[in-house]
Length: 325
Ligand SMILES: [Zn+2]
Image (spheres, rainbow, N blue to C red):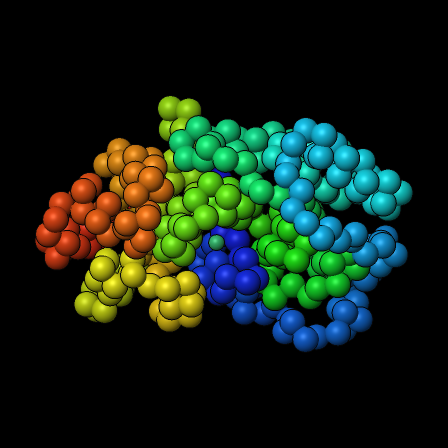
């Protein structure tokens, strides 16, 4: 199975929000500005009339762990609130899914994307469940995605793909843009609780690795994707930062400066470690040693060699041999 996509997380920055495929560039640029009033988009109103009458989502003050009982209670509450408006609700541990494409379609997405990814991610990386229930709202097209974001969450999406809203612990997705978009975002709530000290470079490197993925002998496997071309151009221009520099970026630096190349460099470092059969062990070693190796550089040296200059030269040459599309 091949998944494709990338998902913006509104509080994380544009690196997430970049289009998953070059063919989507124009669509992304054509997205209305976030400040545009809801009524300025008559298409959304016409195609999703039910959404306009939806009640706003209930908010929860404290984190609610995704135990079976808590998940069932959340699903029941959501069904009561939104079932009469034509939405389907389903538990797919550790998440609760809400969709507007019918129960069968939601079940298919739950099994083929969410369960598929959660099993493989948990098997390789995550020993802990997310701290809080995350609701995953899967809307079947752009109009209903925007209409539900407005009516239920009071938010105006600034991306055509989907976003995470920390205030509501909810993912709101235009699922027609691809399942990989969803997989990227599913990684974040796991890392937040499994490896809370995880720096942004690995958090986004791992999440973006699985924007484009397949099954490889029962394991989730990242593939080359649309981020490759820009990375190759940056390497050829001799402008890519050193790994020492990338790994020591603060959260603000990672999301703020050279964001696009930061995502790509982190993603293709993860791809390299995956191809070397080291990514899973690297993640676990770094998580174990983060107390005395907060950037991961010392752990990385243990896998790729002490001479980071030589490694970077080797890695850059390897990246230039990769192909996408
Ligand atoms: Zn992300």
